[in-house]
Image (tube, rainbow, N blue to C red; front, side):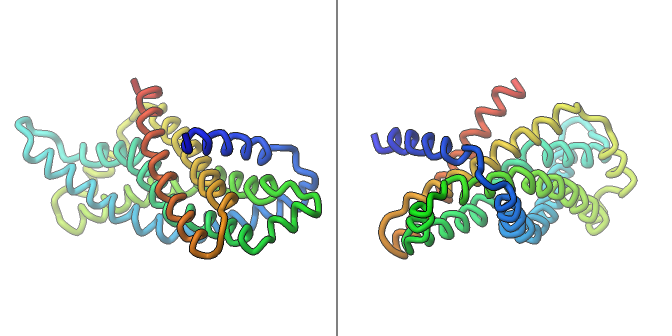
Length: 248
């Protein structure tokens, strides 16, 4: 029953979030600040993770192809690495990483405002606090998460390229040939669709847990943990649903 209640409360919170803003000028400033806090500050983590995982994926693909019963050309390492990164790793795994970093930040920042009564003060002044606090985070996530995923794909492919040079397992020319092999355009659309859906979850679920926190600093920490857990769970479940709907 509590889960159903939370779903209802979340729904009505989203209705308030997407009400027409009173002053767009203030929202534009908030959106730019959120892009810095949620997006630009996550570039380093995304780049580091993508580069090394791309290298690992390429090495695993090569080893699997070598152990195959039928000989598979080395240039398929590049193609397989690119496909895996676009379809699954970059949109899903990076979103899970962002759920931990960005989600905890969102939940704790809004939760701190709640327990210090800053949100109550804004509401007394007639401010639509869900829209004022959450809407800029949603817009920033939808914009910058797409950039982060595109960066992740590029760095993952680069990681596979450098792994080939470092190990000498496959030639750079074969790897580049594999990358240049045509793949269905829908793979990129699929990647972007998942990115937008996951970005919305990452921005709104932690905001929900932060907005409705009750108590003090301990409760803020507890709700931040819940926010990360449930954001990750929803991303994984949504990934399964989108995969079935879009690729079946």
